Image 1 (cartoon, rainbow over the protein chains, first blue to last red):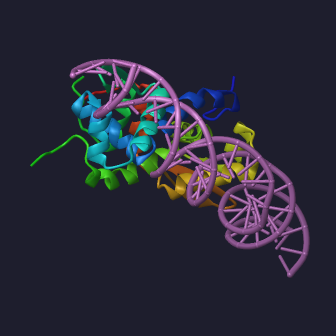
Image 2: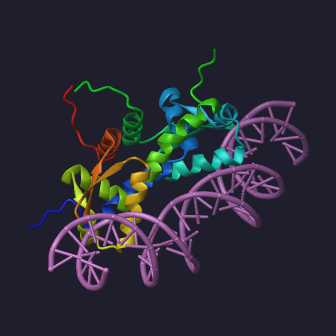
Image 3: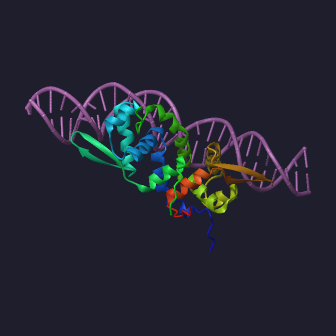
Length: 104
Length: 104
DNA sequence: GTCATATATCGTATTATTTGAATATAACGA
DNA sequence: TCGTTATATTCAAATAATACGATATATGAC
């Protein structure tokens, strides 16, 4: 009968969204996600070259995004392409960067 | 003349938004922010009681939100009320939880 | 002033994240 | 098969985040 704005019984309900945000909350990963919103599909070495960071570093960030369900992959020969997988994340990033768009 | 989707020169541009997300990406802090979106204004002991966590723990989470500019405070006697301070964060949280609202 | 209450900060042990070199795997071509 | 390229994983060291008891500060009542 209380319906409080805060409730410890709801706390675990925040675990999943908090994990999503945690996976996003690193400059490199945020940059990757933002880039994928524009480029739609991108392989690892292209990102690595643009961002000028070691291969293992970028690969680990990508695995973290993948583990969070934020991206998926598509292999094409030697290359692996990364693609955004979660619409919700796109909305979060748009909100974060203040895209104004709202055609109801 | 390249205008790439990824660029190491832009990387530092992601530091601030990534820090904002990092401040949000903890279940307790997300719960607090979500609660403040509903309750508008809340003092520490109310949150502490609802969430049933030690006083120093909640206070530290609140300081982290405050340092990130996500909340501000208003003292009223012995109590300190917390209030959301960043519209962008509200939009992010709405997007994260999938509020549908878009009256253009 | 003292006392009680509300909140903030400190100290620190524990756990998690980040980095990059080294190594492993996967796919292709010769 | 071997060699090459693209990507993933392992490992270790450094750094950062978390939790919470103990302590400090701030305000108000008396």
